[in-house]
Length: 263
Image 1 (cartoon, rainbow, N blue to C red):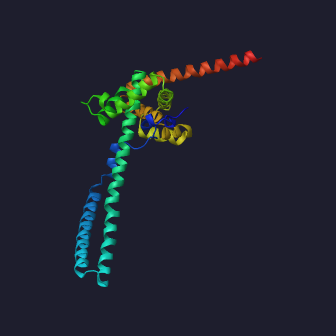
Image 2 (tube, one colour):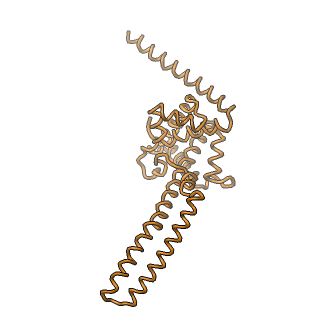
Image 3 (cartoon, rainbow, N blue to C red):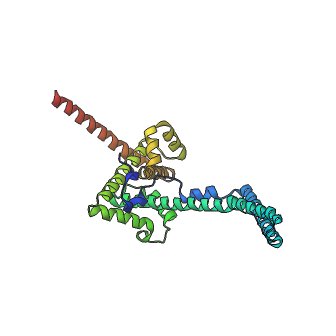
């Protein structure tokens, strides 16, 4: 199975990052609990007190002038400033980078869903497609003007005009989405616990889920459908199982025919 993350063209680089946390998950993780909020407020107050002390020390150093007596207060002020930077500004910058990276992944994942559903209507469970559209794009926005829509359109248009990288990327998205969808129905993944069990019991499945965004999105889509519409889930699961059984029978027939021909 060719991975979506293996694309080489800078034109489609935004599509190729591995799966990761969604924006809302990162935001929730970074947002403190009530106890954490109180701790954060206390930390902010402490930082403000340090900043006031730094300013006072700086004034003292300026008043003393360029003499040996100023070295002590000035050095203390510099050290305290560095401490404030490490405990606040660097942390905020790191959290901001995490959120930006999550937004890029969300847009990429939405583009994958749009490519899959446009290329093969019905492949993406509508419940999941609509939920992710509301979360990433918004219910009133035109998907085609959103960054996710532009990503999807670029890949599909480039693939149609014969761009080799776009064709390979489109093919990997469709193949791996179908594989993830089939695996999720076959393994009866309709809840977080079912997914956890599947990841623990099947190493190949776990690797594909962790590394390929199209496979990952397909599994998430099936799991979501199972949680919100069990009737449709069961119908689709029965169809997927029947298709898989027919594929196995066809494969066995071809193998038998090949052995017979060689004999």
